[in-house]
Image (cartoon, rainbow, N blue to C red; front, side, top):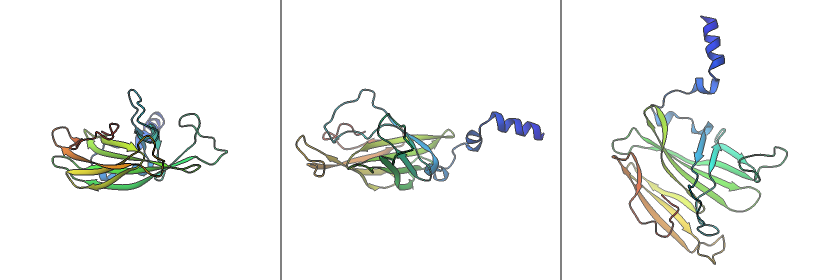
Length: 197
């Protein structure tokens, strides 16, 4: 019996052995998890400062992810990191006809320059898996309010001649929970910021 357990431990890596079915989104350890920011099917240029944040994996360890400029998602451990992504907000809401949604706001700060990006993710447990039900990202993004059935996200919008520190406009986008779709859907226009969901 001990040999069989040892063999299972060898054949099944510890990371997989430690994972269990998602039944309660509030118990998922997002501080030590890889979150993948979606890639645009066809990248679109919305202006120098407008548009989504960088895509790809965010490998959180104790709530932090350090990243280096250069080749995508590679690091030169001999130099200080260029970017730090941290969990800014972490809360659970209970939309109608859901098992609960975990909303995370992550801020990606440029340590060797200026500026930052914000990612807002929503996750729930569906069929035993952690499932993403919302994602928005960009510069000048802020989760203003959230309730069990709705959220408001403020988005800075830069005109062509705006300097980085002074966007022309801040638009408030409203999202509501759709019990039928089991995700958040926009209930207001996003005409000023088409990169947003």
